Image (cartoon, rainbow, N blue to C red; front, side, top):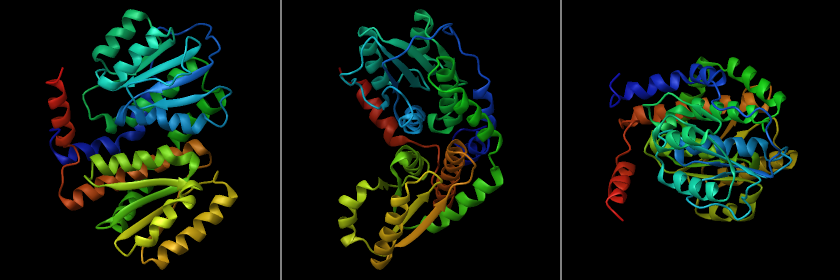
Length: 333
């Protein structure tokens, strides 16, 4: 299919569930027979390659017995040492910032692993015999969340980081995804957002999910969007709504694991937004586990961004500003 054709991105989004099924059954190369206990886990990655690690960190940070973080940077946190597992996630395998951070992790003697489709990362991982999941390449990284996120999950369960109960729940969540429902809800949400200044809100554990939505709006729809979480925004951004008006729309994501106090905060905060003239949309996730709710919301957000792109006549594949940045950087020392 012509990758410059907007229908190309529609086909990729429609195929998310099948993409996830393949990732669940992907082979883990160079598996570790007896994984050692890790003092911390860090997932390296940028943009569409890194969001899977950020989502995984949010999903596991409250239950993981050791620090579990995502790192969207070319440096490393000071606590990362030889006792840590560092997973590099780069769809192309050539992401500059990820490779830079990876070199630092290698110097510190970390246990290394990778999720990639090729490039320098694949060469390095093969040479080092690192545990890794190899994805099919050739598509925009943001369209490959199913491969990168479930590939990461697959790798982590082999390394003894992702509990078996979560791994099985993820498998059930993938099978429970509903294409027709997600597409319809995504389209309905897009129509409500069209022409508005978009503000996305949720409880703290869902920050990375909102970031995924924002990234899709940025890259597919060519739109700016603001992301914040409760209760933190109630201590600062809420005051900024003094300048909010009918040009704004606030999306409040609700899930089954929201803190009860956060639900009350959402209701009160929504009233303030409405008094300022803004539209408020409450979006309820579908699913019987947090993993199912996550995958449902990811797909809804993908469809939302695609419909907004199609209705505005922009190409959801084009990323000319990013291409310009990379081309210019490549000429610098």
